Length: 253
Image (cartoon, rainbow, N blue to C red; front, side, top):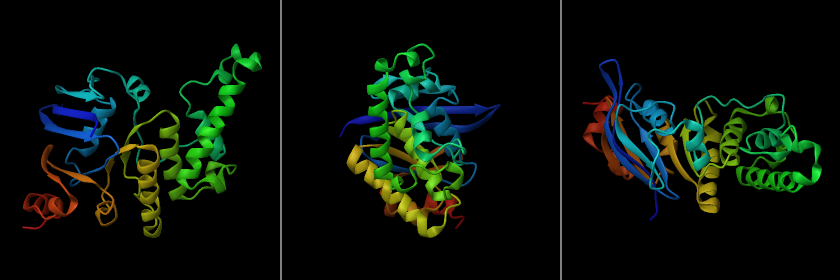
């Protein structure tokens, strides 16, 4: 299995409080990983460190063997390490397809000088539309390709957010609550599309999710955090039977 992401002894402080306290783990290509824990345990702070939004005070982060600890977010994104946020924020007046195309990291047709010379960008534009259409197919959004984002359902907006991350070149996607505030009937549909992206495009996912009754069914591996530390990892059935997880996450004695 190919290693894509390695987190080594990462610590992040806010004042004297260690929000992330010595966390280490590894992700392998094509896996679906679930990051769980009670509110305030450090999940989002850890993802912020991985994505480059925060810089850890201690530890190192490696992506495909390269030390990215000191790199800004946009460089990490160009390497293929991309994150989404809990609240989807597309351009509401643009169509689904237009939102996908806007996510392109480099678009010659948008260059103020090259735009005047159609032969310099038309082939890349056609290629981009084909790429967007293929991703919309896998995501099950082709039926709304020409609909403004403001008309999409909550579940469709979540899928569009994932599509934009992929369109930007994402190969390892950090998902923050992809089924949060979504109708329970649609949650399984969203995860089925995540599985499809993994199977067809070999995308790796690290997912923060509180709806464990849904997410646990689709995870290859689960990491559990409590008070900034990684307290347990393994298969879903093993992790959720661990006394440390039961105590910290489920609040049972």
